[in-house]
Length: 372
Image (cartoon, rainbow, N blue to C red; front, side, top):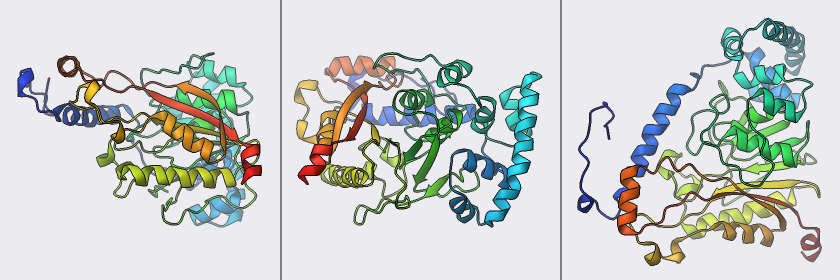
């Protein structure tokens, strides 16, 4: 084991650990992993207005929203259309002559997903998987060893783009509209770019310089509002919220991750209902979350179930709010965060960790709507 300065640390004996040190150790390890991940990712810098317009246009964002977001005139957007087509032609030509995607992204100061979006034009979804060197699972267990650093920014709880792509493949078609209500690092929007889906994304942080496609929006628990214009109904809602208590310190103050259990579940009850009200009959919900158990340093038989939130609790909430569950996809968390020493201590205490993460797919329950 090493510290942040790469100095070797002595491994303490088992009896030197308190009941909560597994949690503290895991959080420290997660921070270190995040720093290592950030080194792998392309450094973020502000994109030109032309590139911002290209990204937002290809995601199907209406010109009026682009103009408001970038503080430009709508006619300016039309002027960039010709310039961007010339840029896309250059990308196609350079790709055919052997220039790599990262090199083109660097040359034109454009995000890699935008370059992929251009390169993959006219491709089927299966061909897109192949070009991205992603295997396509034909079953309901979607385990991925690591995130794909080409998609999404370094972010707490960052999910693999492959997981998003599988959801798009099985539950949407090209040009469908995807809503990402808590966009975080933007992996959903990036994957939608690569798979020719429209996407409207929202998050607490305003990052117009590097993430113009993610609009700032607060889901106020006291006064929930809907960010989409009336009549604009998504085909898919990809909902990957901050998990209960997991990495709460890494999120902004006021994040739902730090809510009490009653506050957290009440928030989901309200937002599930709002999403149901704003959906069309064919809208699908893809809700990703993980079990929470207060297991750190506690023998499994002594865990207090009153402190837990398991996935079937979210499923019950969805059904209560008018969603009919159609699929449960296993998307396990990586076990790599459990080091050998941690596993030994967990064995010693008979502590049972958590890797279960589930993607719940649901559709509006018409009968439930009739009962309301």
